[in-house]
Length: 128
Image (cartoon, rainbow, N blue to C red; front, side, top):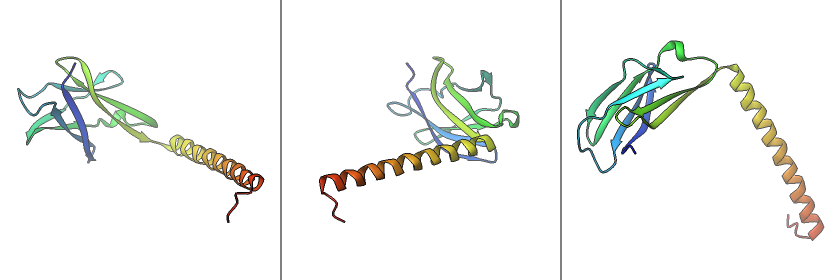
């Protein structure tokens, strides 16, 4: 089992950045980290020393960006275990999906409000 964890810090200028920590502090040598998208390795991944851990920089290849959700897996190369992942979400189809979900949630909320009001009227607990 890997003793590494990854925390996202930001995406800037097409580069995903995060912090890699080793459980129990920064002991031992710099870990070997690899990143892949759809099973293909991402080139140019960098892991730099910083206080208490390492800064991970992953250049996002433009050819991997497309409609929908794209997942990038971060792996401890020594143990071949996943230590993290990040997603990019883009496209019109997604915007439509989110609008549909919000509409469904509104309908469910209206249904619950009507049922609650009916319950209050039937039990005489409407206070106002």
